[in-house]
Amino acid sequence: MRNKEVSMPVKQAIMKLKNENKSIREIAETLGVSKSTVGYIVKKQERTGELSNSKRSGRPRKTTVGDDQRILSIVKKKPFLTAIQIKNTLQDIGVDVSTTTIKRRLHQHNYKWFTTRCKPQDNMASQSQDQSGMLLLQDNMASETEGQSGMSLLQEQVRREILQRMQTRFSSIINDDTMDLECLLDVAQQELALARATSHHVNIPEELVCSLQELICRLSQSMQSVVEAPATPSDIVTVTVNHPPSSE
Image (cartoon, rainbow, N blue to C red; front, side, top):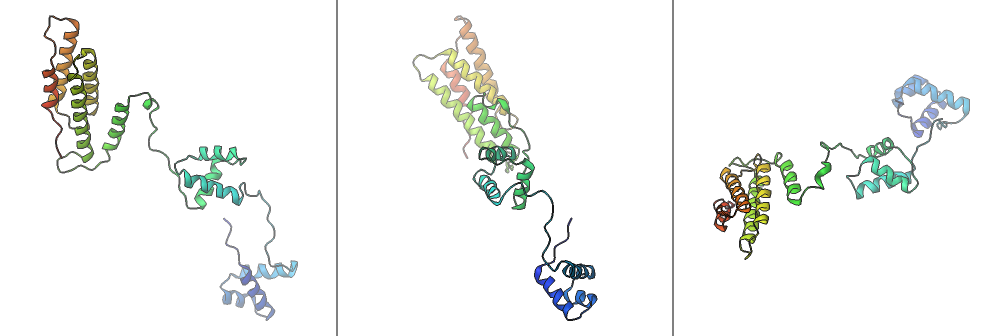
């Protein structure tokens, strides 16, 4: 790593003291500069007659000041873009730089990058809206602080929302004049799957799961044979009313 360069005022002060017949040691002690630095500056001035730094060889910067401002502007507008996405955006305007250069420029302006802890599931878009939202809630539940009841506020909220949604969906079918058993069976199976999926994170009553299983069994029997006693609206009311959402 190259040492810090001596400023031009210090170089001029060195030559001024040298013209006053000061020794290199005296100049170094007066200005707080090493003797080797003083000697190098004096010899260079005597040899070339200049105090400014000579032009160095090497590859010039890949980005201009304008390119650096474009990178910062992109990050300020969309702070969650990856380095590859920023690179592709710059290529569209004719600036070809590597991801390493982009990270270096951001680091020079006190920006830090990070790596995601887990990769998003690819099949999230193909799942239903209820299941997708439930998976996101499950991921966030682990980071929630638990209350005095041993269940976090988010868990209690999800529990209430599940029970309220079940009661609403079942009530809409029960109140219909032509109750469709196949539709009711499909809703019951969906709610049972969601209840099982969230049972490890949300305090779903075990009686509710058992009631759903019994309801599904009776609906299946009713659809297979009319001899069996069909499921009645009272069975569905038993599932939802016996397990009402708890109030806050």
